[in-house]
Each structure stands twice: as C-alpha cells, then as structure tokens.
Image (tube, rainbow, N blue to C red; front, side, top):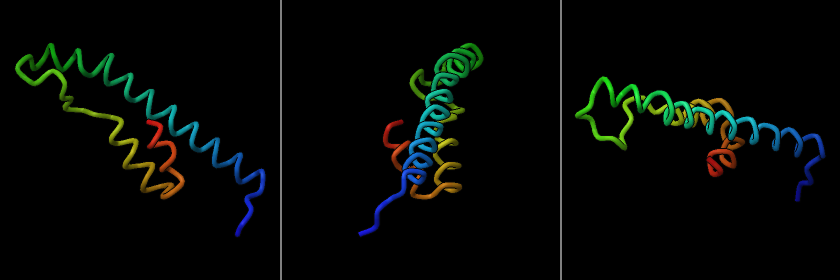
Amino acid sequence: MTAFSSSQVRNFATTSAVLFAIYMASYIVVAVVVSPVQEMILPDVIRFASLLFLPHGVRVLSASLLGAKSVPAMVLG
C-alpha cells in the first residue's frame, strides 16, 4: 500500500480545483454568450443544443494532458 505525501495530495487537489473552475467557466461562457448569439443567428436550431460546446473541449484537453488525474474534476463538472 502506497502512502501519498502531503505535496502530492496538495498538487492533486490544486489540479482538480483549477480544472473544475475552468470547466465551470467554460460552461458559463456557453450559457451566457454562445447560446444567445446562436439563438440570434440561427433561430431554427434546437435551443438546448449548442454548436460550440466549450466544456467538451476542456474535458478532451484535460484527459489528454493529465490522464487519470483529470477524472475527479470531470466528475465534479
């Protein structure tokens, strides 16, 4: 059984918190900016679908860059 040092736990918590904040910020940008602009430009597109969904990009980049360390933040998001 491997014990984690305090610096490893702190690093993991910081990474998760920053990733969660970026995910939530991108979701807010989509809800406040992208969706209203999309509604004005393309009124026939379904309202709950966004053509530019930034949180998915955050998930893809975090999974490719951080690997398993990104899972807790994605679960929170």
